[in-house]
Image (tube, rainbow, N blue to C red):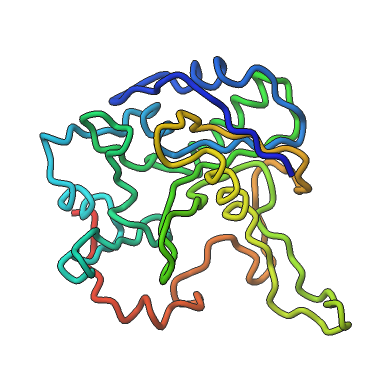
Amino acid sequence: MNVQPIKTRKFLPPKDDLWDLISGSIHSLEENSVVVITSKIVSIGEGRCVKIKDTDKDRLAEKEADYYLSRDLVPGKWLMHTLKNNLLIASAGIDKSNGQDYYILWPKNPQKSAEVIWKFLRKKYGLRNVGVILTDSHTVPLHRGLVGMCIGFYGFLPLRDYRGKKDIFGQELLMSQTNIPDSLSSAAVFEMGEGNEQTPIAIISDVDLDFIGPIRSQKKFNSFQVPLKEDLFYPFLKSVKWRKGGA
């Protein structure tokens, strides 16, 4: 697998032209590639920016989140824990780094945004098979530092299913599935950086994926997103005194 970060011009909030940025930065694109884009520039392209001086970040996070936990309950009061789009993320994904005087929100519908970018890439570069991933950074419990995660994707099957196959000792695997979008996001964000690298796009090539269009599956336990009550971490998540967001 090869991950190539792409240097771009500065992308300026509160709104800039995403299609111009992609066209001016990606000069060619091969079949069976995955284009990884930070959600922040997608949000700027959609105008999802709010002036810092006009709002309070916590109140904005409460509005953007599906559920939230007050920062008063977090060690150091560093952030608010929130649930948004079936993801555990700080402050509903709201960030001000590389945002000048603006808070940058998540795209309104990351999955739909990924699909729109997928259609653009296929048409622009004359491709049949291409994947798109929108990323953000998050923390891992009991570890310091940030890693990349996927908040939206399109164009490929998200799970590599080992269930029913044998391990090296011939025992049947019962639960193992590889989470492809988050695995690729972590590798790409590592190359793209977290500071002033100015590489908000990466191209992943030489990767073995099942490239497809719309993603639908009726197989049991084969959805990428897991319902809360089915999730292995439900005992922890249900014990939190979440407040309903969106107000």
